[in-house]
Amino acid sequence: MVKAKNTKQMNFWGGEPGRAYVDRNPLNLQESDILYLRDYGITRRELNERFLGDLNHGLKILEVGANIGLQLELLRLMGFKNLLGIELNNYAVEKAKKLHPQIDVIRGSAFDLPFCDGYFDLAYTSGVLIHIDPKDLPEVLDGIYRVTNRYIWCYEFAAREPVEIAYRDKQELFWKQDFLKLYTSRFPDLKIVKSEELPVLNSKNFSQMFLLEKN
Image 1 (cartoon, helix red, strand yellow):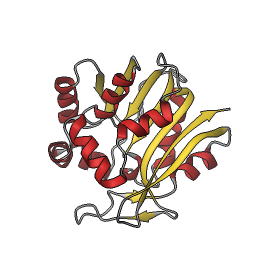
Image 2: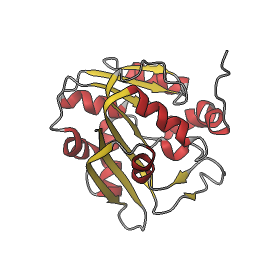
Image 3: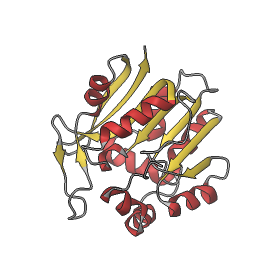
Image 4: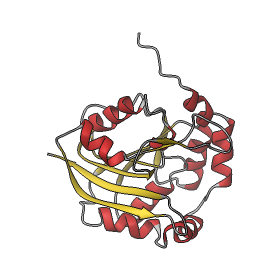
């Protein structure tokens, strides 16, 4: 029997700090729009349309690290119908069920995606890879790559070179790097459909959003 993965980051985000994160962040789409406008000058709705607006709405989509399901709800409002999220923190899963009853979010880990190879047409993360120890990232990327038969979509805080950032004065919880380069180097068959760097306003920081397709 294979022992389930257990990391410092999983214990942190799956526990009370993860619950606190849920409670202090946007709980609805209006609050999320305000946050994105403040940081990027564009709403997440507009970004989603820019990257996924031309895709077939019948695609089977998985979000890895869905939190309370806000991004899945945005996709539902765009017309996507086959949506599923997997989330480590049980409190976030319960919140998702209450706030977005039309979307399925189940409890689980990015290290152990309980799906057949190629089961989804698109798999994505949004602000999740930054909280995985760089030494463990290849395992997570392999899982995401495995469960999708076509697209990988990604939105993450990024940096030109790998760097650790203190998270609320705590270490080993937040890393930035070039996630696009990480994906394309690890999986040479992936082609870039679209990618953008999104500067954080009044800051030297930036995020990446990119859509990749299996060749």
